[in-house]
Image (cartoon, rainbow, N blue to C red; front, side, top):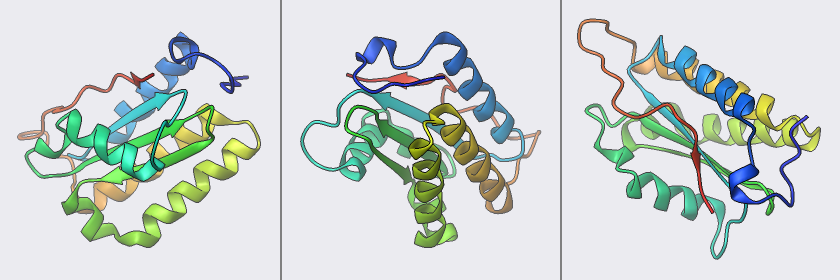
Length: 153
């Protein structure tokens, strides 16, 4: 069982944990043109989780997808903080209630120490919601952002 608390950034996720999350992203993206990324780091540092997620989102140019439909799932494990940041087109279509419910979903799994399951579940839920507003089109869709899990400090 993954217990990331008090681990260094380079050991936050095992190789199999990363693979499970990548597979969850790939499965979710099969039904949507939306892009999902996961960023995990040990400590948040200054500020709050949403500010950090916003910083990472723009630093990694996630706002440059063709349809402005990228989502970042952010987790600072040692600080027990998390956030989800969605680009403008997604955020407007899905509303704040959806994003709040996803954070609550992840938080519930984290309280039970089901970290990878919590992130995977939210990736799946985001993918399903994205497919409604940004369906996959095999003729035009390309994977604009890497599915690899980003590991921070």
